[in-house]
Amino acid sequence: MKTGVFGGSFNPIHNGHIELAKMFYKELELDRLLIVPSYIAPHKFVDKAIFPDQRFEMCALAAKDIEGFEVSNIEIKRHGASYTYLTLKELHSIYPDDELYLITGADMFLTIHQWKKPEVIFQLATICGIPRNDDDISALNKQAEYLSSLNARTRILDAAVMTVSSTEIRQKVKAGEDISTLVDPAVNKYIKEHNLYR
Image (cartoon, rainbow, N blue to C red; front, side, top):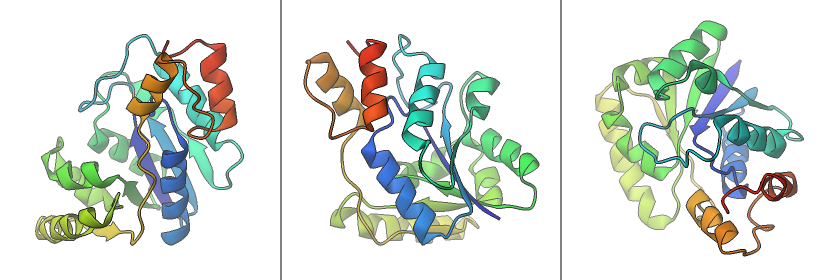
């Protein structure tokens, strides 16, 4: 079995996240793709007014009708900083026979060697990246060469994803602007019903 691992704060999860995940699911011929919302992302500020369970619920809503997609709460259950090496170790114990593919955006791919215990990450998963634009491609290829020298396995998708960000969506909600084209309809409804990001 081939399992994709797509972690992040997902605050909120948006169409760019889903588009990226679908690309990897298809291109890597995955059997399952796990969306893993963090409890506390070590490298990101997350608004404490938004509970981890709410971010999990939004991920579940966005993924519910997509074949092969699952949402995992292992980082939320673990509490504390959501270090990727710990998540991969736990997933390796749950799915000992699976090939794990860690799905990242361009920024994460370019900095992954600076994460906590990168050697464990490289041992347990293939590191997968995707450019946002043409300028990213050469940087990602150069990084892939460097990671290879650290005994990491890598895959770079030859495609670009939409550049919407969760920060932009939070700002739009706060300003009372429409986000219906940027998030799943169920996620949009959840944000309104729970008065998030106001």
